[in-house]
Length: 74
Image (cartoon, rainbow, N blue to C red; front, side):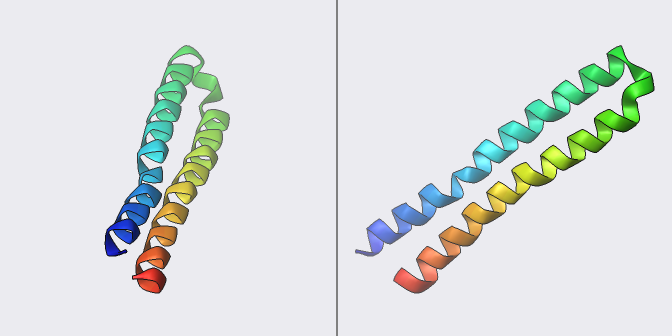
């Protein structure tokens, strides 16, 4: 039973990989957009920060779920 709990917690933490990839792609796109239109840097930066915060929240939710799985089922 404890093996399945560890496996479930590991799967829940995998959301961090998706968030990291998403933030990296968003940053790449923002840097390219700023290079093409430097005058729009303010708007681009605001959108980038909002998107990065939402992606990071997804990773934190996955981490919290993993902790809950370990604490309550383990």
